[in-house]
Structures are given as structure tokens and as C-alpha cells.
Length: 379
Image (tube, rainbow, N blue to C red):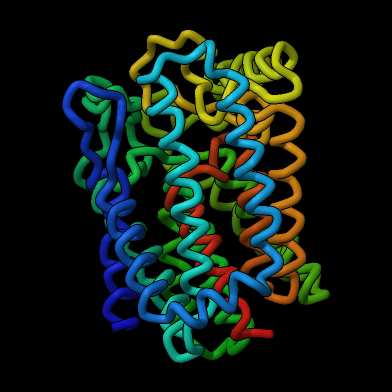
């Protein structure tokens, strides 16, 4: 049964935002991926309940997860007078989903090694599928400006893929590239992974996402430091440099790497988040009542979050929440520090999350939790 459930996870993962639907007359969005993760988590937990309960007693992440939960509950409790029952319900769904993905880690970590060994190949498969779908979109549907009518950002000749966003699609592709490159470093004669890396890198480049390019460089900095080889980073940096020279530049603001509009918009978003935190320094405005704190009437899919994950934590849960969340990040680092793939992915996502709400993006959370759960095999 484990094998079937793991395959199910990665069969749905590449659908990205294509499996979303809104409950009638509400702001609540449900993804098929969320539902599958919930079902898989429940079934794995029940099937391996003895190992799961034992792991709860020993896993060092359980304590920081508990502190984070208390901080979230405190932030919502303090802000009860300022939220309608409907707003409270919708806000409370965000932490529910966050803990759903954390629970996936707790369900997978105690699995037999044979079952967990299927997960990293599954992640590579998911990343390749995202890459392939993105390439098809770039070739046959380069103008996705029509998505603006559905409250998505409009893009022209940028790879947005099934996640309908070049930044988040790029982040997934960087994570997939890290897995493929590590296979190459283990055995440079594996031609298949050279080919796969080239394909993933090509689609990554076509996102024209500056945050993704920076994430890519950070990943190779970590890999180079861990491997004690500056050549790895130099090669990666040179490849990116020459890629940027030859990338096609069709008409449109989005493909200009010197574009300023998005940079100024992000800066304003950071300032707004910092201002909210300054007014609610201890408990924030409630996780995740960010949309209501900004009085946002925008239907944009980014309306419920800040452009920086840590600023979102600070604005919605205050200093107490920020400290508890940093405690989780510290524990993640300590628990995964012996696994190069995890640690490179971890720092790469951290950097990307300064420009996008990456740490709270469901598919990124799923990827990191699964990497951490399977990292025990490597120790």
C-alpha cells in the first residue's frame, strides 16, 4: 500500500494550480493536491500507527511544531475582536493546511527504508513533469495574458507552467535540478541525469525569474561548500551568465531582467508588511488574516500573503510567532544538515522566500518535508 500512496502523491503534484477550485461564494480554495496529501497522511499514519506514535515521542521537530501551533492560536485569539466569524474561519484554514504538510513528514519519516527510497525518484519525476508541461506551455501558449481575467498575473513569453507563476515554477525546477545534479556528482557517468539536468535547467532559464536565478546560485554555493570544490559554483555561475546572454528577448516587460515595476511593487509590499508588524509587534494580526489587515479588495491569488515569508510570519504572528517559526527553521537545519540535497534545497528556498511567499507555498512545503523525511536514509 505504501508504494501506491507514494505514487499517488507524485501523480497529482505536477498538476499545480490546475487542480484548484473555489468553494461557491467563498474565498476558500481547495486543491486536489491538498486532499491527496491528507488522505495519504491519514492512511500511512494508520497503517504504521505503532511506528508513528513512537516517532512522535522521539522526533526533535515535535516540540518546535508545538510552539508554532501555540503562537498561531495565540495570534488568532488576541485578534478575535477584530475578525468576523467568516474571516476567522478562512484565516484558520491556512495553519490547518500548513500542519497538514508537516503531518506528511511525521507520517513518512517512520516508514520502512524500502518505502522511503521511492520518494526522491518520485520528486525527480514530478520535477521533470513540471518542466515538460512548462516547455509545452512556453512553445504553444507563450501569451498567457488571458489569465489576468482569472486574477493571475499576465505574462508574455515566460514559462509559467502548471503553477501559472514563473517564480514558483522556477523554484520547483531548481529543487528538481538539485536532485539531478547530486546524482551526477555521485556518478558523473550517468548520462541520463546529465540529459535530465539540461532539460530542467533550460526550462528554469525560460521563467525569466530573477529570484529563481538567485536561488539557483545559492544552491550551487551550498553544494560547492559541502563538496569543497569552488569549480562546481564557477561552472554553474558561468553557465547562468552565458544563458542570460543568449536568452531570447521577445517584446514584453517580463523578459527584461532590468525591469523595475515588479521590484518597486515588491519593495512596497515589504514596507506594508513591516508596518503591520510595527503596529502589532507581539502577536501580529492573526495567522493568516493578512488580507484583512491590509483591507485588500484585490482578488489576486497573492492577496492572502506577503512577498516575504518571514515578514508574513512577523506580521501575522508577531515576535512570538517569528521566534517559534525560526525555532522550526533551526531544527530543520540541524535535522537535515548531513543531507546535501536537503540542505542545498533548504537554503535555496530560504533565499527565494525573501522575494516570494515560498516557505508557505504548498508544493514547496511538501517537497522540503519529504526530503527531510527521506534524508534519514542517507545518514
